[in-house]
Amino acid sequence: MTGQQLMITAVAIPSALDAGTDHSAGGTGGVMDFHECHALREKHELEKWGDLDRCPTAMESLEYWRGNEYEERRLFIARLGQHTVGTCSVTLPLRESTSTAGIMVDVSAAFRRRGWGRRLLEHAEAVAADSGRTSLDAYCELPAGTVESAVRLIPAKSGAGGLPADDPDVAFAAGAGYELEQVERSSRLTLPVPASQLDALETETSSRATGYALVGWSDTCPDELVAEYAVLKNRMSTDVPIAGLDWEAEDWDPARVRQEEQANSRSGVQCQVAAALHRPTGKLVAYTVLNWRPGIPASITQQDTLVSSGHRGKRLGLLIKATNLRAAQHRWPAARSVLTWNAVENRHMLAINNLLGFKPAGYEGEWQKRLG
Image 1: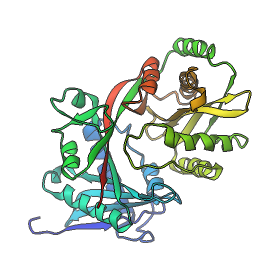
Image 2: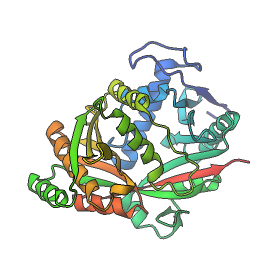
Image 3: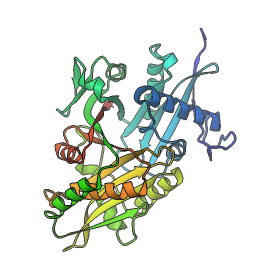
Image 4: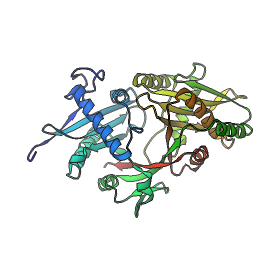
């Protein structure tokens, strides 16, 4: 491979996982390039975690990389001759945070520490800059043991948490000019949670959360609640801690909720939602979401959890989480654990998760680089 030139090309996202070569999205390679990129992601996840719990399925990846009216997504593959060196990607928000871009670089183990990662990063950054973006964000997650045993940490600018300074991913990001804005803790809950434990939690929390009715749904929000649900999802984008990241509030409406539900359906993702309705006003004031994929049946992913500011301090967060766990265990009996992520500074939500039995599993760094 000496003297060969690194070729970075756009991946044409195929119309289906078993489609023939498809050039409709631009670039070259079509379905084979897409499958190579996905295989590299799976291999990387297995190397680091020993499972695919954090990895999207091929169906999820296909739906994701198609993009939508809210975000453009570009995927690239790099080769030396016939050898795949790695991938990079750029995500471009289209409705809000339009000065930002998400950057990802993944290098095959056989080609690491040769400068190819920097080449891929430079390519992705150039794509973002050409699209008028001035703020780049990226992430990397490390196992909890790696972080907790580290001798020296790079502290997050949020003031909470840090990542090992000598980890290759961390050193790569820092060396490329990215700053560690925030650290999130990933946590894992072993399933099943005993019914008696859920009973006790629901009894204790219900005594404090008076004046509320619990509602829930599978996959599709009822028409009579979708407008209120959109309001909560809009608040979710502003109420969670984001440190110094250049992210703006997301503009959610019923159409965006339905678009997300349809995308989940196409990608094979099933969703279970529990929410709290404030009886005096008839408004939704809290919700929590769990996702499950048939392709990875042992793992559930905890998505959003939000309690509106005027309704906090009444144990609603714990109540809706316990209620949703009960529904999820009934609906997806093959699941053996739940994974969730929370900012290290989000002590309140971490305390709720600890009460439910979640244990630290990893730490994810949220990185940012401003251009110009």
